[in-house]
Image (cartoon, rainbow, N blue to C red):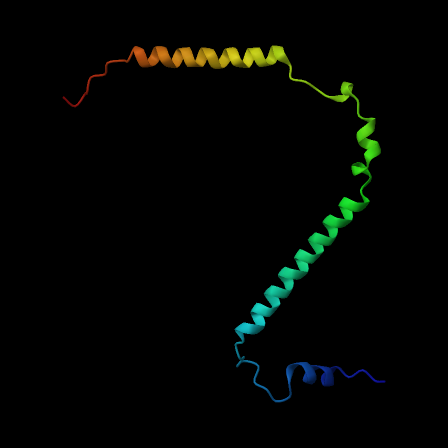
Length: 108
């Protein structure tokens, strides 16, 4: 079988057609968009199911291996320091609202 590029070109482009005048077909464009949308969604769903079913991190054995020593708690000293900072800011704001500065309009 001999491969003829000109025959293949004529088959796809059409023989004797004016390719500058293209018929607009909006249905074809929407069909392509919907096909791409559903194929991407199918891939995402398949990939998610694969990871849920075959992932080793989600097995029961990994949950049983965790102990209470692995759990980290909040550093209470740092928490107190942050809370004190916010209390100081609140007091400063209340003081500034009570002691309003008197400004004179320079245009007068």
